[in-house]
Image: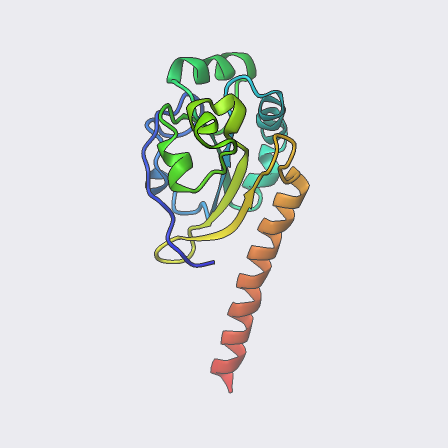
Length: 178
């Protein structure tokens, strides 16, 4: 995938810059893993943000920064941070503009657009910041609240992206030596 990601600025109630913006991250962060959550009440979303927190070292060892984006007002997102003390960005997207810009799936037509609880599905996007401009390297669009990649699967995707870059660099080096 090569389309450029949507740049954005959202209120961040956890670790990292506030407001959060991809462009404000350190240059040594090669990947940004955007977790588009369903809503404040979603049990699976709450479990996922805690699992990400538990595995934060695995993401950072891969030069990746996870970011959870919740389509709720900042007050509700602050409630998650108060309860879970997440060590990575947790952003409020009250109008679901960024979720829409990244094509987060919504079911049930107008009803789904009116109520995140009924319609919004989880999504994950990995941005590769090593390219200029950054590009979307991976997308998973959930079809149900349970349809989300495991953290191990996402870490595997990051490993593969890093491996592809090493292989490409090795090929370029061997070509230049000939």
